[in-house]
View 1: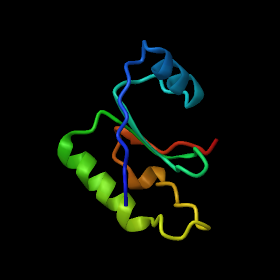
View 2: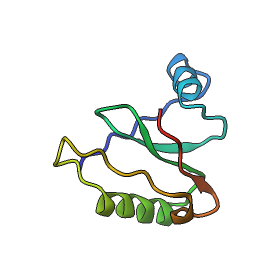
View 3: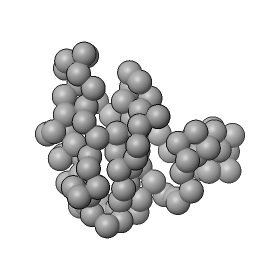
View 4: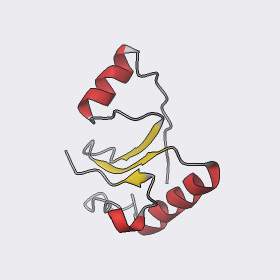
Length: 90
C-alpha cells in the first residue's frame, strides 16, 4: 500500500479549504482518504507514534487497494481509542 502524508497549516489557503471541506476543527489531525472517491475512511486526532503505527497497520490489514472495485471499509467507533473518531462518508 502507498500513503501520501500531506501537511498543511490550518491558516494556509489549502489548509483552510481542507478543514472546511472535511469539517476539521481540532488539530493536529490525520485522515485516511480513499484516493478514488475522496471519502474520508478514518480520522484521528492527537495520536502518539505507537498508537498511530498500530492504527495504520490495522487499517492496512483490514483493507486492500488491489481490487479497484472494492472501496475500503471505514473503521467503526468501537474500534478506535477515545481520542479518535470515525468520519461519515462525503
